[in-house]
Amino acid sequence: MRQVDIAVVGGGSAGLAAAIAAKEAGAREVLVLEREDELGGILRQCIHNGFGLHRFKEELTGPEYASRYIAKARELGVEHMTGVTVLELGEGRTITAVGENGLIKLRAGAVVLATGCRERPRGALATPGTRPAGVYTAGAAQKLMNIGGFLPGRHVVILGSGDIGLIMARRFTLQGAKVEAVAEIMPYSSGLARNIAQCLDDFGIPLLLSHTVVDIKGRERVESVTIAEVDRNRKPIPGTEREIACDTLLLSVGLIPENELARAAGIELCPSTGGAAVDDSLETSMPGVFACGNALHVHDLVDNVSAESERAGRSAARFLLCGRREGRRAHLLQGEGVSGLVPQNLLLPAKEEVKLMFRPKKPLENAVFSVLCGGEELLRKNLPHALPGEMAEVVLPASLLPGEPRELTARLVGEEVL
Amino acid sequence: MIRELVCINCPVGCRLRVELEGEQVVSVSGNRCKRGESYGREECLDPRRTVTALARVSGSSRPLPVKTSRPVPKQKVMDCAAAAAGLTVQPPVEIGQVVLKNVAGTGADLLATDSAE
Ligand SMILES: Cc1cc2nc3c(=O)[nH]c(=O)nc-3n(C[C@H](O)[C@H](O)[C@H](O)COP(=O)(O)OP(=O)(O)OC[C@H]3O[C@@H](n4cnc5c(N)ncnc54)[C@H](O)[C@@H]3O)c2cc1C
Ligand code: SF4
Image (cartoon, rainbow over the protein chains, first blue to last red):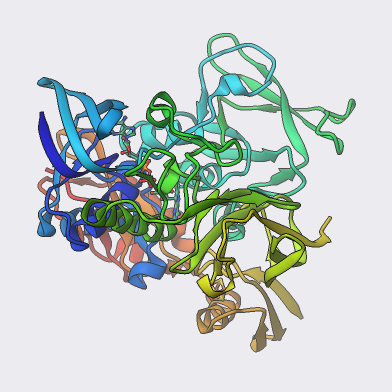
């Protein structure tokens, strides 16, 4: 069985950044295993610009951002295998994968899981009506268009205002198709404000908040969808239905971390993020196995994916070279107003600052984020605008943390907008 | 007159208030950095966008992603996208290579944002 220092599962922006950082931190043999035929992950199909402003102080497109990391990985001697799917992560960090030449077995000193996320499939949506062709998830349509070179439709309705749907509204328009409307069931958009401005407003595409699709018509191909307004409980309001003729319905209703490997390996998962539960070094419940990027929690920005994954890569190298960190793990719980909190636990006494990432449950103005331990407030931070569509980051300095393993709770309160 | 805008220069998406007097920008507020101020000003006087689009590659079904070398006037955005869609490039193409000069008369070029073999 081949032995490597660090095996990275997934060659997207997370896997590449983790591999580079692990190599720079002293790991010798770092191997990236990627299912697709090329490295880069989802960035390959994100041909729009808006990547890397923090990292490179430039607005790059997805393929440009990926190519910089691929070049860096190559320069540092990170190894990779493409067209190889990891099937199993087992005891003692053994990896079973399959590629063109059959089964591959490896043993790794440390493992980084960077398998990205997938779109919620249509089955998860309670959209009634027939099941004609012309219904795509936004990411699938993006791949068809930008990689496959095929325009999936000419008259489009988009359900869900996630960023991919917004980006695709613009892409369809620029390719000469007409986007009739974007319907969002919530009273606010889950996408970034800049994407609403530059992808919808620029082209006069209406964003219908508190609206959903209640019917899809068409025999072989979509012929129309019916949208309706919803009440506070997200139930369609009778009498508000409107039929829109179209040949394509895009679903942009959210992403979930891809974690089959972790689940099968018995790694503890977090119900709120959908990813593995990790400590402040991004180590999962399986010693020496780390997680980062969209596999850990769904990110809005690739710059944050890269930064987080570098941390995972450095942690993996440290595990390899120095063994597991000593200390006791304490839970970090989500209190009021907080969702998707990462990390789920941390090692105490803390030697370094702890970076907390989370999403506000609801849009809030003048919000206050705090971390509590017992009855005591350890940290307090003001967040003038808190939106579920924008991941927030707060740094908890080591000096503020308790010496013993005690449960901590994060909370976010503020004025509700709407 | 006050115009409310969202700065699109970075993901923070600051909500800007631009105070206008006729054709003059009097003030920009709500921006967290200097880029927001110039965006607010330009968006009211001469709005521009970088266009990303797809061109064809001769002998391949996989399209070549391209972008304008600099932001172009907003009313030229659709023309630039159409110019890209009508273009067939000969491989090999290097990332960053100019594939069309002076796209839609904007003075900007179309650059490849990926390579093609
Ligand atoms: C459509 C879309 C648009 C976005 N737009 C922007 C934007 O405008 N600006 C911005 O900053 N950010 C944007 N983002 C966010 C950011 O780009 C992504 O979150 C980031 O690139 C994700 O990187 P990742 O490596 O975690 O996942 P991915 O890129 O998905 O990489 C995961 C990789 O793992 C591989 N893999 C999975 N399972 C296995 C397995 N079992 N074995 C082997 N390989 C496996 C996959 O093939 C894939 O290549 C966007 C994201 C999406 C999805
Ligand atoms: S003003 Fe600055 S911080 Fe705010 S969105 Fe624009 S570029 Fe970003």
